[in-house]
Image (tube, rainbow over all chains, first blue to last red; front, side):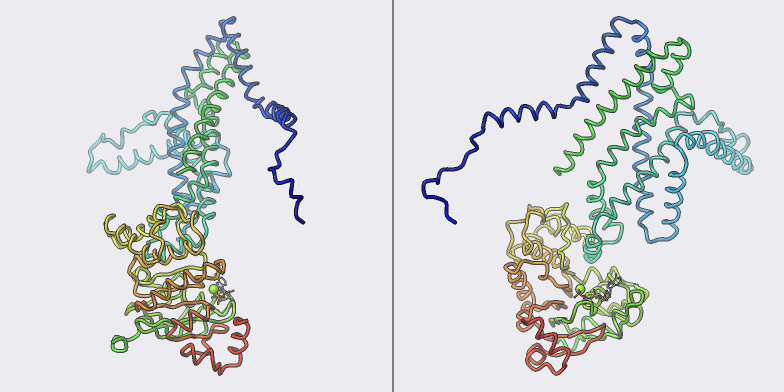
Length: 290
Length: 248
Ligand SMILES: Nc1ncnc2c1ncn2[C@@H]1O[C@H](COP(=O)(O)OP(=O)(O)OP(=O)(O)O)[C@@H](O)[C@H]1O
Ligand SMILES: [Mg+2]
């Protein structure tokens, strides 16, 4: 089946104008309308700010809490990654004790709402630990004297921001543990076997061979969890920590300006999460290239 | 000299179960330094399990494996000592995909052998020359053909200066045109006097390189002998049937 001798010229698509047109339609259809919608809402808000003083006041109050929101998110997330990596390694460990401790942690975390976990850390675990430290101080008075550093620890020494950070870190650590476990298990058994048969110890094989590959694979879920953490950090307002949400609640209940306040609050979270998603995507593409 | 020093690998009455499967049923083999032992047998007869019990990737239920004087028993003691002395090459290469070829070769040298970076790189480059791909040092495994990857895997194992090399079907995941480049490297090694245990159905390699061939079936050694004897006059009926299948 040879073609006719005269048709040797390269076949170019002749419908160029049509395809250009359809490309334009395609581009139109593929515009990120959701983003345009958000931008328009932002413009509307800016208009409201210029015409309505209440919005400006509400925004000012909410911005007072933005540092706390970012601080709580960042510290909790980094701690959660460390806890999650440790627990994830425990979940794939052959050591039965380590495996069971890690699994208990993950299962408890997953079975209790985060808000309840915050309350539990703040009002149960931390006070109990402080009581325990005090009791230890009492017991050691023959050595340390009375009063000593241990007996004088008071509940108020550990502020609610710190309690919330601990609670969020442990809560998200439980989720990240499962993310890391899934990542480690997605790396074929052959990698561990090759590393071990070169004489590497299990920790060496994990650190230099399995984890670098596993972590690259779980970057997308880890990035999503950072954004979730930013949103869940608003739960700290339930304990009176003055993040954006708490500032908004205080202002709204004092001024009765609920619509202005909570519209501004919602939009602030949206702006922060959009910025964070862009950062996360940037980091992901950079890591994939490496 | 070799007979005076005794076997470098000695497998003594080794048994291994996977649940109900009795994968090794009292296997005993001695391999003298410099020997090349080729293991053949039908699928599932325990060839991989035998190889993997020599470097402790499988624990054994009973019996002993002695590598260069170090005993591995069912307690799995001494396993790290043995592993650094035994190189293993896998059917699926198992190169580290996140590392360059050079890094694949230097990682265990620096972490296990505690060589410095300069020395381990030098050794790596020399070995890449030996396996005939010096130009690929900075590439990632995914950028290499299967045959090239397997040669890197061989070089990676050699970088540890192993006393014994294990090959588990090193060419059976390769396209036919790449098989010989890997077998040639293995032949070089055999000529240089490397002690090798090779699971492979490449009869040409067995004829050229093997000191002995072992035929396994259902977890046992059924026949053993120099390749010419075993292949040309198979005394065992089942082995005759097996050979007629793989030769045609
Ligand atoms: N991890 C395992 N769990 C359960 N059974 C196993 C495992 N590894 C091997 N077996 C079984 O042990 C027997 C021997 O397996 P082995 O892999 O050693 O055979 P083989 O001779 O290498 O086969 P092949 O030529 O297919 O590679 C088989 O019946 C196999 O199903
Ligand atoms: Mg096998």
